[in-house]
Image (tube, rainbow, N blue to C red; front, side, top):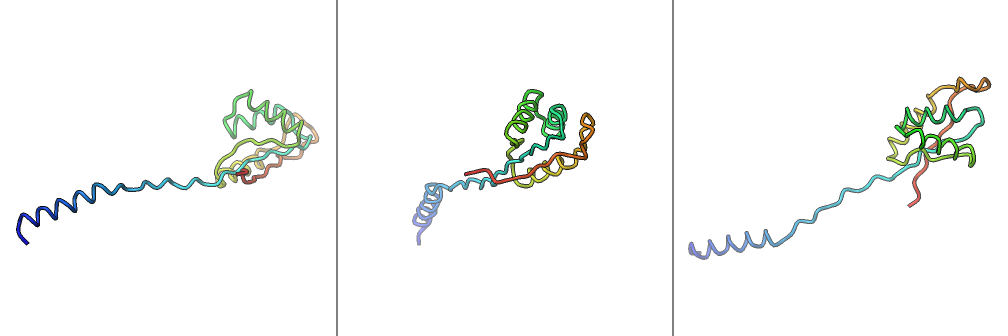
Length: 118
């Protein structure tokens, strides 16, 4: 093969490499989970609002909305996130402690996680 043919072959290979676009694979999105807070009548609005602020970084207004929803419908979604983060937040709710404003309160509120509907 002559130098001219080798040069053309190398040029063709380079062009083919450039023409073939690489497919960018989108990273798979992790399944999302809701952190659900359950009502129990042994915790005050103030307790729920404080917990939402401290554990989730929610504003006073958002904490109040969640307290109102859990009181009226029996449950409220506090956060939607990855499974591992949802499990952590559920455990933090369970460890938050009793409500000092309610004498009959024996401990933390209940929470669960469930997959977000697709």
